[in-house]
Image (tube, rainbow, N blue to C red; front, side):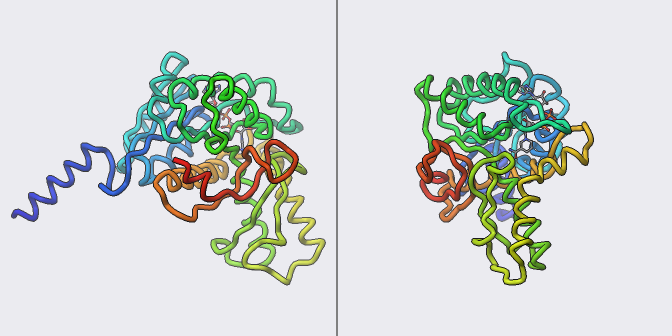
Amino acid sequence: RSAVLKSTSELLRRSRRGYSSSATPERKVAILGAAGGIGQPLALLMKINPLVSSLSLFDIAGTPGVAADVSHINSPALVKGFMGDDQLGEALEGSDVVIIPAGVPRKPGMTRDDLFNINAGIVKGLCTAIAKHCPNALVNMISNPVNSTVPIAAEVFKKAGTYDEKKLFGVTTLDVVRAKTFYAGKAGLPVSEVNVPVVGGHAGITILPLFSQATPASNSLSQEDIVALTKRTQDGGTEVVEAKAGKGSATLSMAYAGAVFADACLKGLNGVPDVVECSYVQSTVTELPFFASKLQRGHFNSG
Ligand code: NAI
């Protein structure tokens, strides 16, 4: 009987604290653009991530429905929906990780640069609020063109005096996810064991998958295969845009990739060693001010 009482009180204690293990620190994740094509499946994936204790879903419209829906899933994260600019501050307050998939996606025939005018303004507004309400959060930028929205975010944070280059990430994980899938398929390797670093940026020819550094190495691929795999990885987004024929760009695979990257950030914050992901960040690897490369300790563990 005392064992039952003990485990009941432990359960109550955990549920009051809102997370499943007393060893796991509480972590709040905010998604800005949570009612969109990426935002909704990303909200689902973050709700079932055991490292998340509080999940804040913000959008200019539609978040009450998404939040109510996702909140019924029996995982520990407490879900709250926020809608409209006057609720943005509350949505962000205390966030450890902020994921930004807010903004318009591509239609067939558009490049990511065509999104600049609209998305630059959206990102600027959201980052101004981040600087005010959760200046220490790790920011995961998904909104395109990532090659430009990340430098814009950096300028906003610099102006606010909150910029920390180790806390601002352009999410290029979908390029890595695609490179792994395409490489494993072509080389006949088990996809879950495959790793492919992808460096550079997140648009067309700036996406540089390094198949020469892929593991496990494959000696069955010809130079032509590598060229074709490189091109398919660079054009992966366009492949989806065209297949969706005017109904947007990658959302489900992007949500997966966004969830993988946010999980790496949470693990880094929690002190898990050896977390490695590629991301587009301020960089000294080349003469370019921002560059995607493999990140590890120092970025993910900067707290
Ligand atoms: P979507 O149009 O389905 O959703 C965007 C959401 O953002 C909408 O719910 C909209 O209401 C919301 N929104 C607009 N202004 C906002 C604001 N000021 N504050 C908060 N929310 C706001 O678009 P989707 O497909 O989800 O794509 C979102 C972005 O992600 C696009 O810019 C797209 O290009 C980008 N993307 C990035 C990828 C990457 O690999 N980094 C891959 C795929 C898409």
